[in-house]
Image (tube, rainbow, N blue to C red):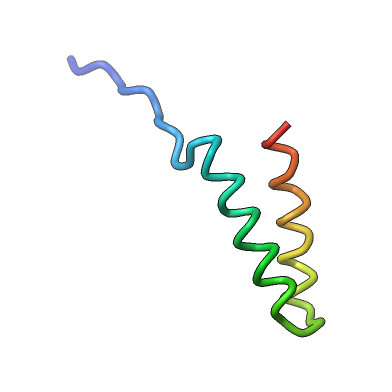
Length: 51
């Protein structure tokens, strides 16, 4: 019987910083919309991973 394999992370810890920087640029370059506020919240949540 085959052993289950361990799940691998999709993103590395370094990726979170890159994604967060990309979000910051997108937030600065867009208008104040509901989607922009969602991006700002995501940016904030991703900041917790860098600690």
